[in-house]
Image (tube, rainbow, N blue to C red):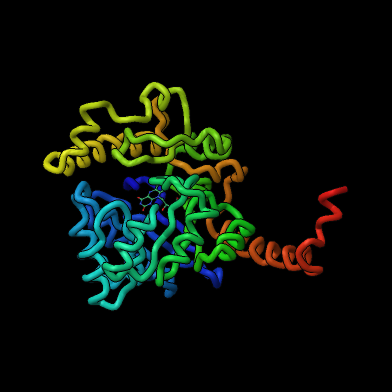
Length: 319
Ligand SMILES: Cc1cc2nc3c(=O)[nH]c(=O)nc-3n(C[C@H](O)[C@H](O)[C@H](O)COP(=O)(O)O)c2cc1C
């Protein structure tokens, strides 16, 4: 995200301890570096940094240098080829998880030595995948040797418990943390998250060339969601692909940055379908505690409901 965007996302582990995942917040690597230093001073818990590793990201190399130097315990890569990131982070004894949306890509990153994958499913904020989490998580779990983290639409503890039941080792949560006082985004964005329904979330290729989930408003309708013929052709051509991605990423990130930090009629606000379950602004720490509590409650309720074994609810269903 841009420098005024959401800086810290919480990465909930199976132990429901808070491991913080930092979205590298600035064009200048120095700010990422100072953010990492601040984080290190505030916690001795493991934390993660997200690196966009496609060629369109001009900060890829300096940001990776910082992660190596600071021995960031967990790097989460997205969008491109994580080979170099995995090699260099492993050299300093750190872990790399990679965002994936398909088994094909997950197998590739596993072969490259990734320590885990983040299954970014349909309904996620940011670059959402096409597959339901009910399928993607167990599908990846079944076919991979490395841990799977579930991402997409997760807002509460019951969803976290179900994700773990499906085979996830942890969950990654994005959209819910936009509705926090800590998120340095325009109030309009936060209000839009509270107001939006799941079906207000649409996917647009207009921002980066890859589908991004945004809240539908008249401006996104006007903008359209598909690339025009020329853009699509340039993105397909191996010789122009890299430059086209850079141009699209630049235009898209500028639009996102403008929209998240100040009110404009051109709001392009990224969010996932979990918006339907978010109804108030809450401090990030409270959200983590609430999710942890709900997680344990959901597990206990489930155990209680199904204590008499499968089929015990048949009477209730048929009455
Ligand atoms: C506003 C916004 C910006 C995001 N930016 C990034 C990003 O820069 N890199 C990345 O890997 N994921 C990014 N994501 C995706 C999140 O890391 C996470 O996978 C996703 O938000 C999970 O789905 P959820 O939003 O439904 O919880 C972003 C998500 C949102 C909502």
